Length: 282
Image 1 (cartoon, rainbow, N blue to C red):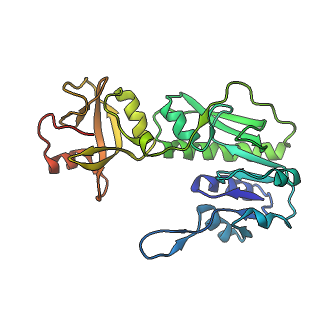
Image 2: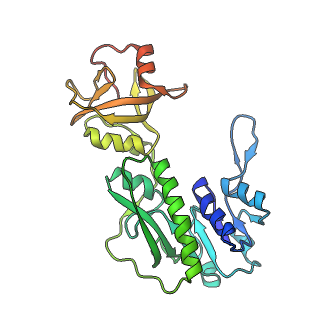
Image 3: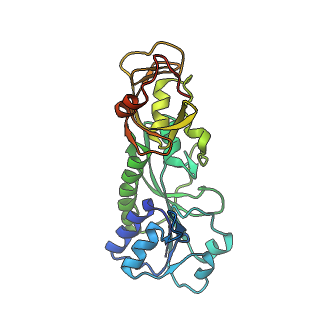
């Protein structure tokens, strides 16, 4: 049995199927409305299950009559009740090196914190938030990846790790060792670019996706940026060409998205808005 919903949960499901494991049921999120027409779209995991002919359920109540040896959980998005865990052993593929970054946004929090490495763990599902013992883990260097790119690499590494771990037998998990940190769900404030911070940290905010500031009273998203080669002068938030002055150094804008418009190269946006010298962002 497989529990998962978003795109990151698709590679592990495909890996299990291709490795010959029988997936008797997929439990996934409800279809979501997208666009203005009111049509609904299945989750990425549901789409794969439909293609593979795997039975699908949208709630845990469907598990009562299901016979399975093990449940595999990947980004399902909800805590599982104790009575279910008593009936069926479950493992979770978690995208961090536990006990660091338990919780909802481990990939983004690792980037924001400036971690050099993260990884994936195959862990036992127990009561509590990502507190179970670990069967296997694999490290991944973060580098300069965006959250989306890093998540793809972790899903690939995790898929292989999951198949290898199940093929060799789970054995007994190792208790998590070390101080736990929590990857709380991100909100708009986490993605706001505060120009009084250092340019190096602001680049990390951009890398998690959806970073934003304001320009002339309207929201401006920043999709790609880099630390400028030379520090910017002027007050924080001041534009000097394509470089924004920060609390420490300058941030070079590479790709932006004005409110209500498509993403575009920063040079194209600047050519259109023609900012005054030293005009402020945010």
